[in-house]
Length: 456
Image 1: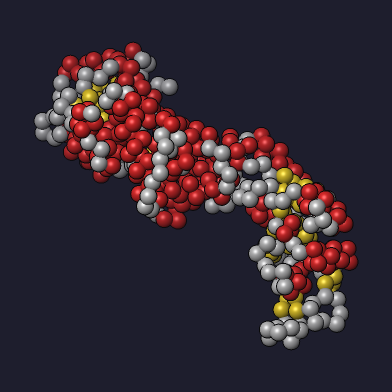
Image 2: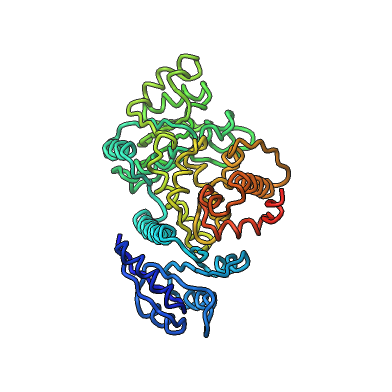
């Protein structure tokens, strides 16, 4: 991909060599030897990546970077210096630099930096598009497996067929049920839900069918049950596999006759309700074990929809992560944060026992852990401690809060990686999926003394 690059440096030889290297690689390079003039050019023109020296007369590179950000320019800025030290790199990162390169800079490193910057900008644009397309709700997917499943949802939603949604906890069964209602002819009617596992056995009949005043101790007034509340709409019974057997018989009668009778009532009430059920249990096994009525099973198991666990739809994880990130950023008024391709690959490699619900929680944790405006593989390792402790075969037993334990894991992981690469910071940063400047900053935050490591 051809890029429009801008280079500011007071050294004519540096400008000539860098611009030549970029042009030979197929990029366009604009050069400037005056930082004050450069600032005006950057405000006036659109560039894909800006490269700036640090030590310059009239205005140093860090001051220029600060003024670029203050002007609202979002172009990635890469700082360069032949007099680099950790404090300088940290300061540049804090001001918003994408990377910090030490002179002399190899052509391969220059071109890799451009490639990474362009890729990051592309990810930002894709994330923005996803946020615009997905909004704050809806079912998020990009893969073929969910596309086929959603085609089934569309088809069955238009009918009155009873639907049984199956899937592990956290796979989004309630969201599918709501979608079925919203796309059905009953969409203008009420959508009522009841989690059968969350209601005590002695109260579930009252919750479903209602009760009359004085029908039992504590019944101080008439209560309209879920079936009556859902008349002309949809009733979603979640975790129906946990419904008591005695209640299953009464539910079967309602489904067969289309009428309910309140506890303490003397006459049935007709109800016109579409029932959609869901469970994480294997209902066939529940029937065999005598925990679920076979006749009720056949009543509700007319059109099964089986939601795949997240580990079987890894292709959807980037879109889901972007979707949740957009929601969380909006809710908290945080700055926008993007995911590097390597970070997304790390998320896709996780087994996700808690499925989409777990992913949403991890994304929120990632946004809190992220350094700058990017989630990296190291951020993912920090947010998923079970992965971090496995790095390099380390055994870890931490104490303290989650945040304190995560810091301990990060510190140990980085120190071990530095030692493994013979104190070569560039190779260590590459192995951890970090920019060199970000690794310096992380070491400073975690209290890692590079000089002490070199003495060991």
